[in-house]
Image 1 (cartoon, helix red, strand yellow):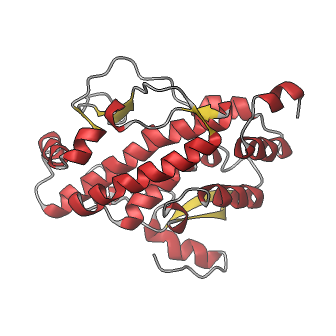
Image 2 (spheres, rainbow, N blue to C red):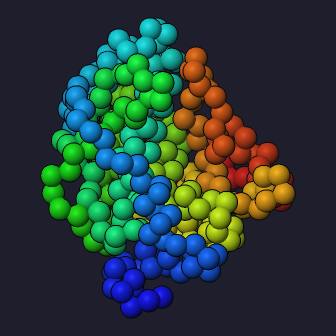
Length: 264
């Protein structure tokens, strides 16, 4: 590793990730910069995540108004679960990508995370966007604080909004695993799975209990995927489908690898 690059990697996990990519002939900064989406332009916020956590009905009422098909408890639960996954993928994932690229990243600030209105765009934007106010933190602080924050949000999403433990924690795990998902079919699968699983175990929450990083074969190529133990329920929505990590197919995938699935 060149001296200048080593100086840009103050965190041990960012450095271990860089070594993983180098072993496969990949450039860390190029991979992560490509995975990071451009910052959203000016967007309207309906309410903040902090307000949602204080008044969960704000979110359910908004979703009922946004989606005419939401008419019963089951469809509301599915819609909330998918919106929560969007929170993990549009807020936690880019922050984690930034952490692995730069060695530091802002923390998600509930009062600076906003739910945006539904748009008519052919390529729908994520519902959540983040306008961080505080400066970036180092890797150790990011791990400790994010583990705490996601555990603090969990009771509201679980008890007040009906998101299952498997759906909640596996979605959080997908967000935290974004740097590894960026190279799922590029880096050595076994090494990637080992490092990704070790990374998730650093957080003082239940994420690592609901995600298994496993080698998988697509066509004739051996890859690595984050196998969820819980389903986000997107397949229940009119526009939904099964995703590549869906827990519905978990037992079959593990059986194909000769692994015995643990109970979710």
